[in-house]
Image (cartoon, rainbow, N blue to C red; front, top):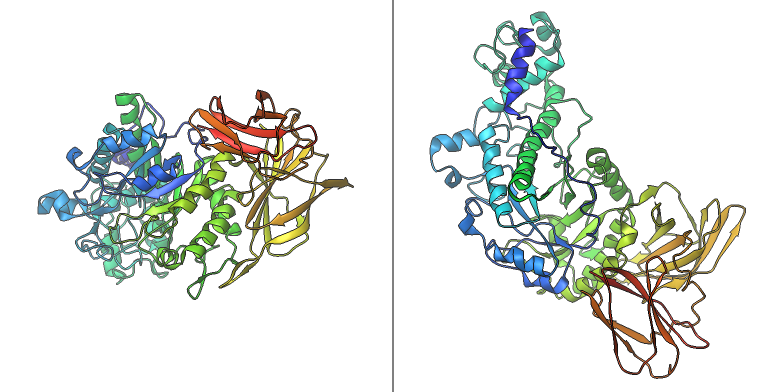
Length: 635
C-alpha cells in the first residue's frame, strides 16, 4: 500500500483537468491547401497573401528569448492574415533552451537536462549556445505554456510545438539524454507501477540492481539518495557514455523516442512519460484558450503525436519512416529529381500511424531544414521544383495526406518562393486542390488495388459515404531522370465494384474543367478508359442520385470558351465568353449536389453572379453543344 501511495503522490504533478486535452473533431475539414512560411515575429510574408493558402502551418517560432515577450510580436500580422481568410499558426520550440532565457546559472541548470554522467546536454549542432530543455521539469513545461499563452493573446489560430518530444536524442544522437533528477524520479515511479509486486531480490535478479541501489518500496520514489538512482546504476556498470547499450538490462524499460514519432502502444518509460508531459502542456494551453477567450486553439507538433488537431511531419534526413529505413522525401539522382521514386507506401504508413495516435487529425507534410532534403529541393532548377510538387504533392493528396507548399524558412539567407521563381506556379497549382477540396476530406481509404494497363502508375482508392462516391487517384512515375515526365495515354483502369456508378468523370490539375469518361461494366468489374495522364488524375465514380443529374450528359466539346474570375472567389464571380462563335444558349451554375443555382443567357459582355460559400460547376450549352464544365469555389 505504501508503494502505491508513493506512486500516486509522486504523479500528482500532472494536474487533473475539468476539460479534455482532445481537440474538437472536424475543425480542419475546411482546410486543404497549406503553406510553410516561418517569418520574423514582427513582419508578414507577402508571399502568403499572393498564394492565399487556407492556413500557414508555422508562421512564427519562438527561439531563444525572441518570442518570450509580448513586445517581440507584431500581432497585427495575425489580423491581416485573417482578413484574407488565411489561418495563422504560431509556434515555439519545445526542447531547446538558452542561458539568456534563464537569466541566472541556477535556473539555467535546473531547466536543462543531463546525460548519464550528469553533464548538461548541448544542442549546439544547430546553433552555438543551445541546450536541451528538460521537459520532465514542471517549471520548464510552464515556460512553454507561458509562451503559447502570449501567442494566444495575440489571436493566433494554433500553436506549433516544435520537437515536442524530441528531447531524448543526446548531443550526438545516441540517446544519452534525460538522465536528470526530474526524469529519474519519474523513471522510478514508472518501474514501481509496472512491477508492483517486485521485492528486492526481483529487482536484483531481473535488472542487475544491487542491494544498495534498487526500487525500495520503503523509501519515497523521488528520493534518489535512498532509493534507486539510475545514473549511479549506469556508472557502476560503465554505461555512462552509451546508456542504451544492449548489455543494459534496463535499456528496454527506458526506451527511445524516434524522430518525434510517439508510440503509445509500446510499454516503455520514455514513450509513456513523454506522452504525459505532452498532455500536461497542451491541456493547459487548451484550457487557457477556452477559459480566457472561449475559443478552441489548434495544436500541432513536428512529428506524430496524440491529442493534436493536425500532425505536422517534417521531412528530414535520418528519418525511419520507410519501414525502419530513411524515406527519401526529396528523391534525387545526382542533382536531378528522381521522379520514378514512389512515396506511396511511406504516405500510407504515416496515415495509419497517425490514425492510431490521433484519429482523424490530418497529416500535413513540410520540407524541414536545415537538411539535405531542403538543400536538394533548393538546388533544383525551376522545372524540377515544379515536377516535384506535381508528383509528390499529388501523391500526398492521393493517399490522404496534405502537403505544405514551401515559401520560406526563418533564415534570411535562404531562398524564398519568389527568389526561386516558383510562387506563381505554387499559387496556380494549389488552386486545383482548393477547388476540389471536398474530395480530400472525410474519406475512407480502401485497400482495393485497381488493375492499370500501363506500368509505373500508382493508384489509391477512397470512398466518401457522405457523397456516395469513390475516387481513384493515379500518380504517374514514368519519369526520365534529367528529362522529365512521360505522359501516358489511352489506357484502362479496372476496379471490382458491386454496381455501376451513375457518373464517371475525371478531374486533374493538368487539365481545365471536368472530363466525363467512358466505361464498361462486366462481371462485377468496372473498366474505365483514360485518354491521358500527365502527372495526376482523380477518377470519380459517383453513385449519388443528384450530383451531376443536370450536367452529366456527354460533353460534346472540350473547347475552353468561358473565363471565370476570380477563382477562388470571396462572393462575386465574373463570367465572360472567351470566344464569340457561341452566340446563343445558356450559362448554368450548379451546386455540388447538382442543383441549379443560376441560369443566364450567353452574352458577349461579362456577367456577374453573387454566390454563397461552396463549390459550384459552371456549364455553357448552346443548341447543339455542351461545352466543358468549369469548377468554381467561393470561400
